[in-house]
Length: 210
Figure 1 (tube, helix red, strand yellow):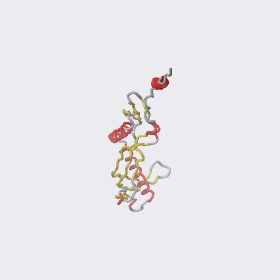
Figure 2 (cartoon, one colour; figure 1 turned 45 degrees about the vertical axis):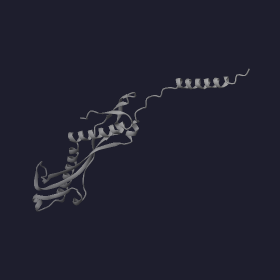
Figure 3 (cartoon, one colour; figure 1 turned 45 degrees about the horizontal axis):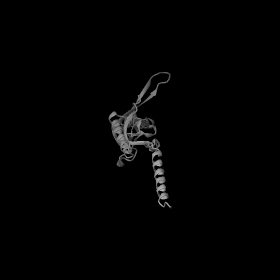
Figure 4 (cartoon, helix red, strand yellow; figure 1 turned 135 degrees about the vertical axis):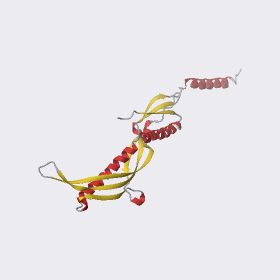
């Protein structure tokens, strides 16, 4: 006597067995890894603050003539310059030095350790005065300089005033309050970036170099 239903029943049982076997043996996928650091490294320097600078720089360059065969000199006067210095600088974090620590794949949390932000390209603005650039408000001669002007003394006074202004903008951009604001801004940007990938980051900073 024929048994027409045995084959379909066996086929269903075989398919069910394969499905169950595949389900049981299927490996559990590992937790997703954090975003690759190379993505951050490609950003290079993260500029998190830009500061405008302005100050009045006063500098006096003396002029004197050495007396031969002595350690003495004869003062001839001086050139005094008054510079209205304007400039700016960016404060940036070098993401090429970033690294991950305390990675918890299950909780999807991590720490990102960053170098301290630092001034990037502090500069004095040499644009024309009407475009917001620096300019010399006054250049005055004193002593014999008023009678016998010395172009070298005047040039030295101008150059040293500009060099002093360059140092001043560098110092202004390195103030603790400015660097603290740059850290806060950089941390906010990186936290938002990593949160968008599903990870909860804690931003840590390397100790400041002395």
